[in-house]
Image (tube, rainbow, N blue to C red; front, side, top):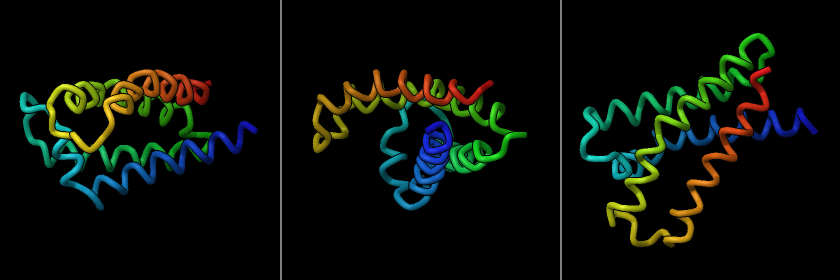
Length: 116
């Protein structure tokens, strides 16, 4: 079961990272106004998700990658708040935008399970 969880988490982050390049307008829209260099931040976070997702697959880099994912999840928290408060995402149900907060905690816990 742990291997399945590991592969699912790895695939999720690689997929999410690739989506930064497939749908950049969506991710750019998530960027709070007070952050600089929106395009670069979207690109860097996408690259980080791909590298960290792949890094989970190797025992030598698994813990480092899991900690990196945790830091990335903390770093993108302002984007989740902005999605909820900006009014730029009327097609996404409010309940889903609120659900992202506890899901973020679960994602952090899930990544933490691979830090050992």
